[in-house]
Image (tube, rainbow, N blue to C red; front, top):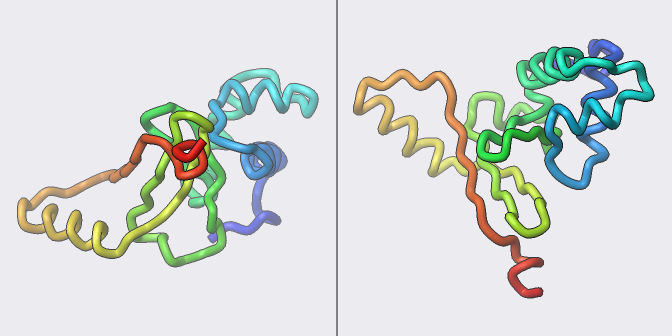
Length: 134
């Protein structure tokens, strides 16, 4: 696991921006927020995000093309496990979770079908409890 001391300046700025965010951010939103820090081009953000993804410190939400800071960036509990996300379509809240039963079932299916996954993303879109009662 990479520590904050090992991150470049740009990686640290991008990670801190995502950590402070109330919800997922697109790369262009991150760029806009970091222009005062010397960011001028999307490539600067994408390079930082690529490394942060590799380090397991951020996650990409495929369905909305946005990024969130990992809820447990220093935890080794899901380094090889499957991470799932519940995304509220009203408020934008993202909840990160893992479930051993889902992970085992997907792994069993891939084994039974001789399928070699390169990436697995589980996203549940809907309405969170707070928005559902409002």
